[in-house]
Image 1: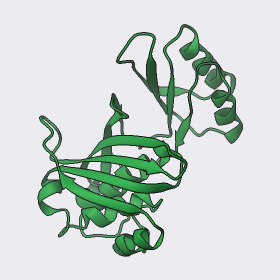
Image 2: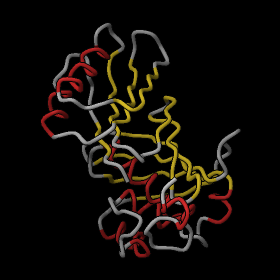
Image 3: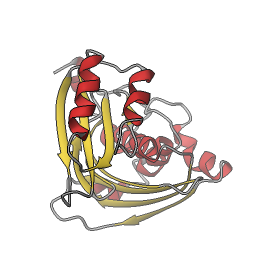
Length: 219
């Protein structure tokens, strides 16, 4: 446990769970999209659905989608800024069985046509847990630098990625593979004990059967 687990994150209020955590979920969704977003469809479950306007969850999610961190002074004005920048957005309530009470499902469309969907929960103290990426199960917190690598499920892809990280002396703290259908698209989620140079990310992008690489720096 560190001091921020006790006193909470540096943030624009009023709530670490409903604003700081929400902003981080939105920020992750933007990074997964890897394009300038032009449309955001946001589903809110549990207490997010009940109190999102009063606690600023709507503004926090949009702020993250615009690329803001939880302590950005522009966060309270994110809805207005989104409209100025041409970002279309909508909110709705959703029913998600067995989900955390503070859960959001964000579907983003980018200006070049890419689509990304992220489901994440704000679990307290500004911390988050991302539970689904583009319909596939996931589990990462953003507290460590994280690689998200969609790829074709073929022999040797995982070995190629892990060998590249070993070559640059980057240690893997946690690894998760999700593959709904054998031989189809899958996702590697790799939490790292350290940071990556941009050349490593570019190297990984060039590997056979790798569909893309998202590098999330720790919050």
